[in-house]
Length: 335
Image (cartoon, rainbow, N blue to C red):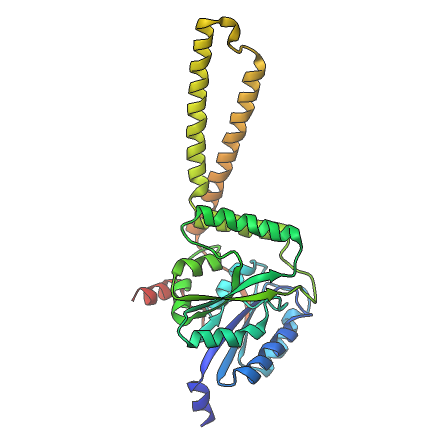
């Protein structure tokens, strides 16, 4: 009787990437479990932790938790593949009717929002996205994020809500659409936005980290920003084309004007080496900039064409069978 009741309950899957978070994983698990027991007793919680080869006791703690609770699944990567690759791979193991895409174990995105997310999902929304309307962070990071989203949204065909991250609850059909993307470096919030579906945005306060040290340093955030720009916009290539056209036309006009000045008054025509040196270094810098942009695209294409698994797993706990194949998910989604 109890097994039939367990099977009839809807399942909410939660994916939590982690790296060297021994101070946070147990608290994250206990907090989520308490929220479901108190506010969502009619739902089953499937909590998927994806560890990026932590060097502390994170995996040991997760193994102890999973041994006591079969609803906890653990994927241990062979090395650190980054939060997006790890989370995307974790989504492939989600069996829930709805999925919280990323709940960070430091709980900066508040798990107490999940009951409201579930309620809105049950009312008919396919995507319930949390919006960080208030951030407990420094002004430098706030300004940098604003600049990034301004660039992406002005140059992309897909609108990314500036305050929305991966703390979203998505329906199973949205998850299938997301997993049908066979991307070597998935920008998950962009993929979700590009899929469409009926969406609602719920504001919340993004909390400051209380334990441990954030793994999202400036270099990691810059890498994620460049990935978003080159994955979801044509702007860099278009900028190269238009800039090259403008420079070429300017050079032709400058040459014509110089010839005209020389014919009417030879003394007015610039004949110093300074002009040549400045023009040479300017055009050389422009060429190197454009070559760098082309290199970003070529590198991305090379990594995509080369193929291979999105991550390499070292261990799986409480997981039966392989992860869902993106090709199969794509066929199911198209059907």
